[in-house]
Image (tube, rainbow, N blue to C red):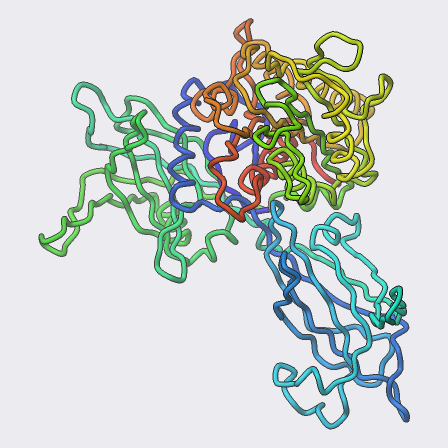
Length: 577
């Protein structure tokens, strides 16, 4: 999948570097810059996949010949509405067609992309018409199949076969009849894997600070069809340097558009308050940067003319050099899925007394008789909806913390299913059932402690690693309060950063989540009691109150998972074969 990052911690190792690196002393500055990218529309990873379709055993609706099938592809919204995406060509006289027309779509890990495929028999009189002009109500319906894009790409061969259903119903139970099979094959676009590694440097940067040199970093942005600039990557921050040499950055050509697509490279002076000063910028395509490298030449930065002044830009003495330009193919997130890797979902739920009495409507744990989910349930459903497709057995470890089980002391990691022997439940509904049951079988207590659940998740990840299983684990912690074991949790997370594990934290209620932002490590990489710095950032946090109405609670957090997954794989030098 496409990506571009900064230092070797978050970028080079994360997207295909050597994997070995020294801890970056300026990492807090580097990761703080991420907020700038996100505020300007940075989208994260995505990949283009091409869908090919074939069918077998179709129903024959013609009298003197076989059916002439065509497939119509739809996307299905949350409300069940269908939006047509594409149509194949008509294959004449065939009950086992292989359609030539492919459909290309962007695969986004963090969203559930529901697809519907309807096969129609096209009457002979319409064969000379453009398929886009055909009125579907005038054609014979042969069958329908539906799935998510995730279900296709998680198959080891990228191929999913579904029963075609005619969908005929009586007034009683459904009497859907099978009408052949449809096979969908997904192949990732080569452009999704093609990257350019760049080493950039500048000279003679001007100082934006009064008593010291600038702390420069670069942001590379592309132009959208509407003319807006959207960032696609950044370098790390280099402190006190007017002639900085940045570590390699990796640009995915698909994210850019093409090597000839115009880019803007902006050089900023880092400020800890987030208001970074623009030193200068330059507009070049990847092809232009390749020429700068091959000729050993440079380009001057400029600043835009102020409003009301001359329309000409001010050219600066500051120059940009391209010390390295290397085009190559990277392994992607989908490559690892095809190799058999799974994402295994875990959940830990806060049962501390600060949530309020579950039997009262003002409690964060209140179960609404109308069926409207509370914030805990919403977080579970949103995460589970996405992650369930990446876990083959769909058995999920589920814990509670901060409560007193019946006839026992306060526990900071108890099995949600009530068992003393095992922690797994069946499916997302199993988590929901165990959660609601636990609410009436434990006494809410406290304090809020994360360390034991992080350690339990890390133990499972470590056991899987020792067995050489192709699994990566995702722990969702849902909490309402301020944790009291910050350093112990940091110690556990620093240890867990070496393991195939990511941690998503959702804050519910109106508490001060300052400690969660520390764990998120966007400003400073986590450090253990013994001074060990985490090899990578594995925590993402979002307060529920920041989520807009109607949005998925975890969509922004889940979008980061493929990057964290890839960073781990390249850090450990694990390559799919």
